[in-house]
Length: 196
Image (cartoon, rainbow, N blue to C red; front, side, top):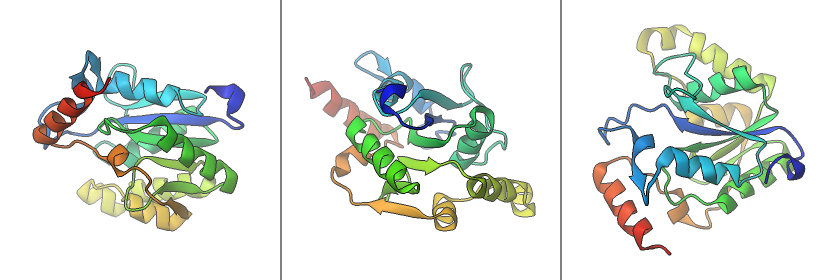
């Protein structure tokens, strides 16, 4: 569903900039049924109500973080600064069961209310309208002495409290499972390979 059905400039951001410490390999390059996670999630986002999909990370066609090791919010800010969208919907590369309906529900609610939206108890996926408050909050955090000293970026919880967020009830908890360890990935692959 590209721009014809998208009333505003909603940019899909695929987060693939993590260090994958527990997985011990680049999660984006893990594959199932011949497709890497990056390819699968990119295809999924392109089926959603977005105008464009951009990957945040260190790969060749990705947008690199302005604040190295600043976490996912650094990746999000970096894409926003470069692409200047009206809103973003952000998904991680390691949610193999995520569905377009789960993503589109966030976009629909977020656009209707002009407010950040995510699912109860989950930081990702998330819809975020791009506002001065969002950009200023993240920039101040990343330019702070605290970040300069410990290199740790702000949390999603902090950001959502600052900008306001609507938490939607979880309809399909399996869709929101992410895979951080080899065992979790192996279990996901077995399940995905059994799907028609």
